[in-house]
Every structure is written in structure tokens, then in C-alpha cells.
Image 1 (cartoon, rainbow over the protein chains, first blue to last red):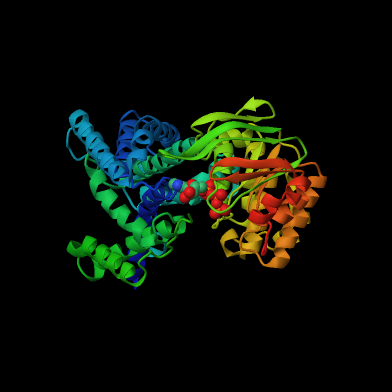
Image 2 (image 1 turned 120 degrees about the horizontal axis):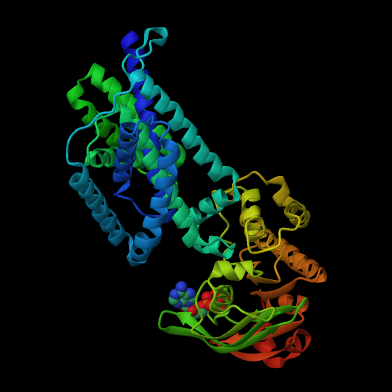
Length: 288
Length: 240
Ligand SMILES: Nc1ncnc2c1ncn2[C@@H]1O[C@H](COP(=O)(O)OP(=O)(O)OP(=O)(O)O)[C@@H](O)[C@H]1O
Ligand SMILES: [Mg+2]
């Protein structure tokens, strides 16, 4: 019973962070119809950001205040100066382009920061908290809370603000959005900036709980792409449900089946859901 | 208010409009009639910037807009209710209406009383008020058409482009749409109207233009066009 509860709790905590990464991926896809293969590298940059902040004596969680705006600006610039030129040439070209960007960023990171595995050790990360006899890592719990806050903030932005409405309208039909006076190129920049900021923030939040190294993005992108597809590409609630589901299934699988099959179990879940619901849990389409 | 001179436009290398000129004076209703494929929708698209004109001059209140992108033209005061409605299906009715007022809420256009205008739209289309929180994609075809018109009105446009607002509607709703167009006209809204019901369009309009294969073949007072034997034979026969 305790083991069950324990794995449910840790699965939910990590799943929420997966969800945050997948939400960034899915929002960018929903609005711009591109799958950003470099999304995992944005997470990696966030992790290194937290690492360097920690080295400089700044708490990694406090460094969010710096890295989120920086990653937002970086994402806007990538969209404005790189992707905007490639997107008109088609979806396949854009996919290949972001894959190239992913390799470039990862290799630059390898070059400058070498391939060592690094960790951030926090004073308050040494001993886990034990509410109700369940062991909970404090940095992971903080990350969980902040991930919920940031994902909710994005959700409220999209639901309640005029610019957020314009983002949703652009996702639905860019031509009609332009007729409403929406500058679609600007919405694309904001969207890509938000996706990148969310990925970077997830990296900062994960950094104290994972090993960090320049190619860590590869594993994360595969995982979170699967989650986004599981939830229905383009759907935020889908990405959240998919992330938590995957986190929980992985952690139950690790306990009740085998740690070695943890990732395989995640894929079985993926194939199972898509067999029953090909459009994903919360599949949405675009009207022409 | 809207002045189109010698407009050439098309898709890719195919030219659809071969130099058309249309004047829409302030607070007047002008209708553009023509058979399927004549280029009516293409004209509307070129005017609102959805397609870039190959050449020609388009002025909105004296300001040249032919080379502007669509969002800048909208901010300049042109509202376009496109053929086939194109409402934002996964957004609520109120969200769709607020988007119509986007330039007023953000930048480029005087804000005015957005809430009051939303009430005005609900006054014109009471069905929309009943369904204000419903997703636009779940509305009936007629309700979506009303939403598309209401959304365009939310801009408080200087010129309103209406492309086949009665398309696919039951006869009773078609009458309703024309009644609303007449009401908007009485409020002084400048409109360019494309309609399959040419007779009804000429009844509500002040001026008319006939478009044939991308060229204007006749134009003039709506009343005189209605009595023109050639126009009657081609566009006002049985079934119109
Ligand atoms: N997206 C497009 N790409 C290429 N050609 C197009 C496109 N849209 C329209 N056309 C062509 O342009 C011509 C004019 O079309 P348009 O839609 O302007 O006609 P219309 O007068 O609005 O007709 P309808 O009464 O059927 O709405 C047609 O020959 C059509 O095939
Ligand atoms: Mg048409």
C-alpha cells in the first residue's frame, strides 16, 4: 500500500514536469504547425542555466527569474531570424531544420561545457521530506509547485487575455485571424518565445533532480513528443494529462514490473492509447 | 470611402481580375453581382489583403492600402466577413466577438465602448446572446453566419465587406440577413456586398456593379441596374 502511494506520488511529481515540457511543444505545434525538434535542447539550456546560477551562488529556483525572460527572448529571436524564413518552404523542411538546430545547440554545448555528467547539490535536497510516511524530494516538490504555477499562468494567458485569444485564433485559422487585425508573424514569435520559455523553465526546475549533460535533450524530446501525441497534438489539457499519466505509469512500472522496462512501459501506454484513440486523448483538429 | 482602381489580382500566375474599378461612397451600400467564378470573392480578398494585388490602387478613406498586409488593413478600418463564415470553431461566441474588436483592444484603432458594441451585436442577433458561452463550432450554420457578421461589426469598421452572408441559409434566415443589412445601412455603415440573391441585393443597395469573367460589364444605380434587360436576363431570372 505504502509502495503504491509512494510511486503514485513520485510519478505525479515527475509527470507534471514532463507535462510542462510537452505543453510547450504542443502549444508551438498548435499555433505554428511545426514540431520543434530542438525543444529538448531548450530544456537542456535551462538546466545548464540553473547549474551556472548555482555555481555563482544563486539558488536554481531563484534563477528562473532570469532564465525565463532570457529563454523567451531567445525563442522569439530563433523564430524571427531563423524559423520564419524556413516555415514557408513546408512542414518537412521545417522539421529537418529544427532537427539540425537541435544537433547544433547540443554540439555547441558539448564543445563549450564538455560531456561530463553534472549535478546540483542543494542543502535542502539532502534529506527528503516525509509527509504521511512518504518520501518526497524537496527540490522535486518545489519544482512540481512551480511547474503547476507556470503552466496555469500560460493557460490563463491563453484563456483570458486578448493576445492569448489571438494566439488561439491563429492556431485555429491564421488567415481569418489576420482579417481580425492579428499580426500572425508577431503571434508566431510570441508563441515560440512562450514554448521556449516553458521548456527552459522546465529545465531549470528539473536541474536539481536529474543528471545534466549536453545531450540530455534527446531523451526528453522523445519522451515529451510521445506525451504530446498521447494527449492529442495541439491540446494543452491533453499534454498535461499525458504527462502525468506517463509519469505515473513509468513509476508504477518501475516498482511492479522492472526498472529496466520503465521506458518501454511508457511506449506500450502510448501505442495502447493511440490504438483506441488515434487523435490522442484530447485530439483536436484545425478548421480550414 | 473605398475606392478600387484598375485592380489586377489572381492566384499565382493565373490572373482572375483584369483591371476592375469600384467606388463605395461613405454610408452607401454597393453590391457586386456576377455568376459563379466571376471573381467576386477574389475581389474581396484583394481588398482586405488576403491576396496581394498584382497591380492597381485601393484606397480606404483616401489612404492607399493595396500593398499592406491584411492585419494592417483591418487596423485601418476594413472588416471582412469572408465567404463560408470562417468563425473560430474552438473559441466561444464572446471570444469570437472580442477578436473582431482586436485592433481596438490592442493597438491601431480607437478603443471606444467594446462592451457596449458587444451588446449592440447581441441586440441585432439575439440568438448569439443566448449562446454566448457556446463554442462557435457547435452553432448552426445560420448562427455561425450571424457570428461572422457580428464579429466583423465589432471592428466598428469604416467599410464592411460582406461575402455571401446568406449562403446556405433557410429562406426565412435569408430574409433576416437582408433585414439586418438594411438596418446597418440605416445606421450609416458603408458596405460592399456580394450576394447570390442579386434582386434582394439590388433592393438594399444604392449602387451595383456586374462582374463578368474578371471585368466589370455594367454598373450604376441599383434601381436602374435592376431594370436593365441584360442584367435581368442574366442575373434576375427565375430562382433569383
Ligand atoms: N485559392 C484559389 N487558387 C486558385 N484559383 C482560385 C482560388 N480561388 C478561386 N480561384 C479561381 O478564381 C476564379 C474566381 O473565383 P472567385 O472565388 O473569386 O469567384 P466568385 O465570383 O466568388 O464565385 P462564387 O459565386 O462561386 O463564390 C475562379 O475561376 C476560381 O477557380
Ligand atoms: Mg465567392
